[in-house]
Every structure is written in structure tokens, then in C-alpha cells.
Length: 162
Image (cartoon, rainbow, N blue to C red):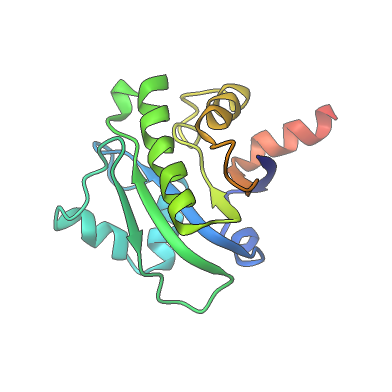
């Protein structure tokens, strides 16, 4: 699993090309935060409307392939449930990301832009989230590139540290 980091910013996302964009969201937090909130805004509230209609709920492991409806550099959008924010733990992370990894295999994804569950709310450290992500990635799959969406402050601190 090759990884790189990109800022959680629509301008940065506009410059990317990927097979898949994957956004986690909570079952008990509205409005949506992080990448899901940005993408919902970009899609004029399409994801929020699916939530209001209870077509999706945000339960851990839930996954929906959403028609994007724009001619951008990303082919597919998946929103995936991360469960209840208050009960977020390694099991919820693994269940949520496991559903994404399974979809990636089925869709034959070579590159994904993804926000890891719990990171927008700083519920899990970056290094821990990366370790758990590697556990979810299928070693039998062609090594996809993971562009991980991160908080700009964390990225700035990381750049200064190096």
C-alpha cells in the first residue's frame, strides 16, 4: 500500500486524479464533518439528502457508491459509515475500512483518495490509523495508491518535523 498525504481542501482535491474518492461519516453527527462534509457541499447536498431520507445511516460497515455527476478527475465516490462517534474504536475503524477495502477489490481500484475514519475528529492518531489501514489492505490486491486526506495543521507540523 503506497501512501501519500493531501490537505483536506477542495482546491487540493480538484487537482487530483484517482479511481475512487472515499469519505467516512458518523451515524450520530450532523452536519457531516471532514471530507464527507466538503464533498456533500460540492455535490449540492446530495449526500445529506440521502441521510435525511434514511437511505444511508452511517452505521459502521455501511457503504454506498454515489453517482458523482460531475466531470472531474475522480471516477467514483463511496461514502461509508463509521458508526457512532462516541463509540469509535479499533473495531469500528476496521469494520468501516474493511468494507472500503472489499469494495476497492471488487471495483479494481488502483488509486483512492480517502479520509481515514476518526481522523477528522482526531479520535485516532495518524500513525495508529495508518497501521490499522495496512491491516485492512489486501496483500493479494495490486498495490493501490492511497492518497490520505489530512488536516492541514497536521501536514504543516509533519513537514516541519522532517
